[in-house]
Length: 138
Image (tube, rainbow, N blue to C red):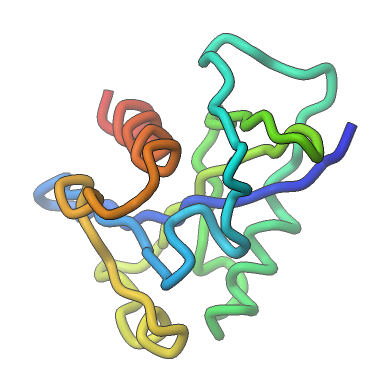
């Protein structure tokens, strides 16, 4: 099995519960766009092997120029995408700071968006955002 991974990074505002996702020019499934043939697997689908988020989240911190521990894993979230090259795990990380790291996003030509601002993304990325939203906010 190809253990390729992507990560969605979000920030949840502590007082309002507002969720914003980090969007880079390539989309919200970071850091490499999903292939055109990607299809989201059903929510109850699970492989025999799970991906541990620590290395993926540390890589995201490094790419964004953030300190270790700036991104925390969101427990019990893992989606799977089927592609012609194999399965892709999609993990979820949350920024631990009070405010989103806007400057780090801007260094990579990124910005933070709400789910309502995701119309221009692919259907699969919007579905991933929806699953993350439902997981975090219930």
